Length: 123
Image 1 (cartoon, rainbow, N blue to C red):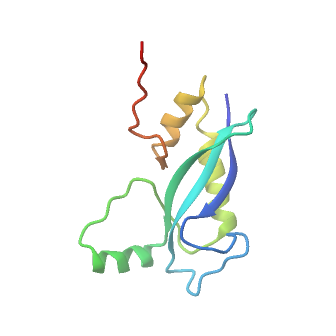
Image 2: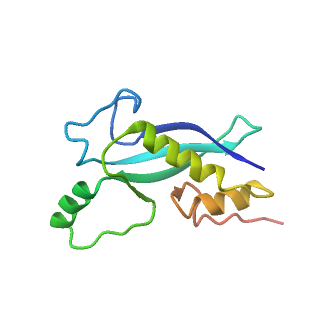
């Protein structure tokens, strides 16, 4: 089974990422949502990542002494094509026999909407 990137957008920037360019591309940070689903289905699930540059990280460290790194993709400057290509490459590497195993792999590089969610069966 293969996963496919179906949509990519910012949770903080109103503009379409294809048309967006920050004032300072070397100091950029934004939460990005990747809608990813099986390549043979229409549906998708949410996977969130913080896309940021080292300069942006440094400014955040001035405000906060410690930052967590899970779900963080660090790039030298904002470049939509590089970001999309990198994310698509990571998704392609997450193939498995079924969707639950793919989501487990994808959640290593992002925050999956159902991460830590427990499904209960009632009898």
